Image (cartoon, rainbow, N blue to C red; front, side, top):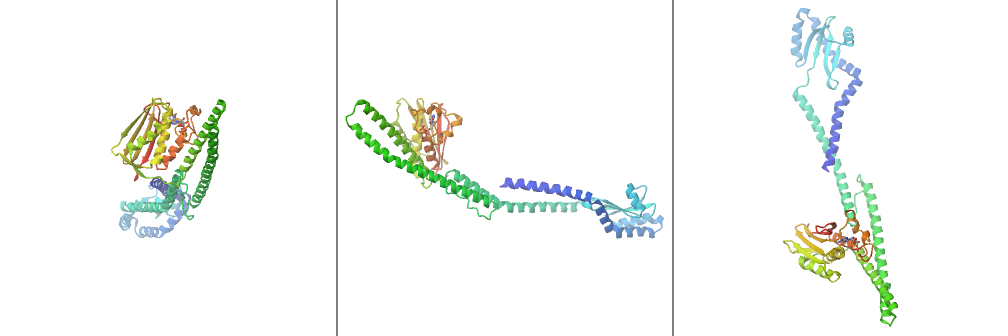
Length: 434
Ligand code: ADP
């Protein structure tokens, strides 16, 4: 907020200072005659009295009159001048000729000096000296106070705007994190009320659409499971009968296809369940090495290549951490399964706990992931070109599920390059109070 305030304030102050400096000059230039006339009217009485003082006295004593007037008018200065000695312009000469005073304007259109003719030879000049320092200081303090009042005014005006904009920003961030029920709740009376109301309507529509999509995915997946189970059961029955070898092999490949379809439906169901914001994560205090061992145990059973070596590096003073064991195990299993698929022969699991949270890295020495694909691989059904062959990969849902499992606990999952040469997946879970 302060950056906006300072920028706005600087612009206002610079404009104000420039205006104060330039506008009076321009106005005085444009209306010079009016200013002159006004000042002539204002000083007429004073000038007549001064001239009378001289005319009343013989010429030889005029210097004494000047001294006396100088004392009386101090700090203004009085000068008695010969007309040809004083440097007047032809127009000023003409005015003096007509017996009129000549006025020169200073700052803000005030009189700087005024000369009145006494006779054909002499003029008396009254000079107004520049303002004394204390008056100048007072003038500048007045400007500083006006500036401060402007700042206070801007602050009062900006505060509610700032508060509402902050609320809009937080709501947008929460919506982006999947909290679809979040709304700005900014009253229509606010200056950004109409913007906030459009934003809330948009959020309503997004929530509605995503809920519809999730419900549809859920319903379709559920509906698919029943006929798939029936088919599986029917094929198992058919296989139990005495069949020629070719028919048996065809039926067995059909069973494999159905199992694959069933796996996809199960993945879809878990993905759509993780999309449900109403499901709050569990908070269980686990012993980290035991937890990692149990996850590794479940992946070990599925490992096809027995030459793969899995190292675990536990680098933490605290051995326990509060997390959702089901979601975290799900995320880690997917990462480890991928690592076993894509590694050459080494996988490393590194665990670090700090007061802010827990970091679990799964590294492998495989082909790695190109930099420009490291975000896209988390999109559902996204698979890199080289793994289009179903033999090397799954359905492209594993990483999307893992990321959702991390985010459901307030954490993150990112793909990086591993020091082992392949891919590194960094799972970050914040500590309960962080
Ligand atoms: P899949 O079920 O196809 O493995 P995932 O969502 O788990 O789907 O992964 C998406 C894509 O990310 C994979 O197709 C694969 O190309 C790439 N990938 C995932 N893990 C690794 C890894 N450890 N090394 C290299 N590529 C990987």
